[in-house]
Image (cartoon, rainbow, N blue to C red):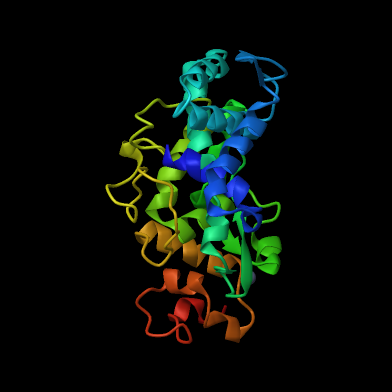
Length: 281
Ligand SMILES: [Zn+2]
């Protein structure tokens, strides 16, 4: 339930400055009641619960679960809120309530462009296919579905590009972690929704990745994406080289800061002297 408490804490943190510490819990209860208010009255589900945006549903559910820790009657509300969903969709809503709102971008803070080293933002790679219910869409906001790129590089290398190019970016940035995520995305795209132990492996089935974070385990959301330590194989280095060759870096000074170059040629002594293959870039 830690994720739920954190989610509520974040929502009240904006006005923490005006709160005495003792009032924090009260503020969290108040926020929980506010989140629930549009959908629950007198213990009954009311309003447009079915058609509400997934984020509102996840927040309401998160609030009900938070209250259920202390108030037994709130457990009945949770059951009623979930009662109208398929079992797997209800499970996804609960996961969204716990993990979907996690502010990983804020936690990372300043990000540099993977290609040129300038200031970057995280660019989404794949969009949710029509073949999956909206309750699953939160999964497309995980770090592994994003690449850090500046405005210029995003426009040049990503905007309007097909899934093959986006897949190259994912492989170069996230190595085997992307492969694990991509297996799930491909299953979704084919209309197949795998079932697995999501309590133990919230991100993807254990068979999709390795045993550790760096090797692609689906055990936890990456609280802090450690791009330097992720496991990359030959296929991931090839993806980085393919990107370098297709989208050449024209300004020599930018090479020095390019993580993409380091991924493509990890054994070269310096980014100033990459292998001959990329020297023309
Ligand atoms: Zn850039």
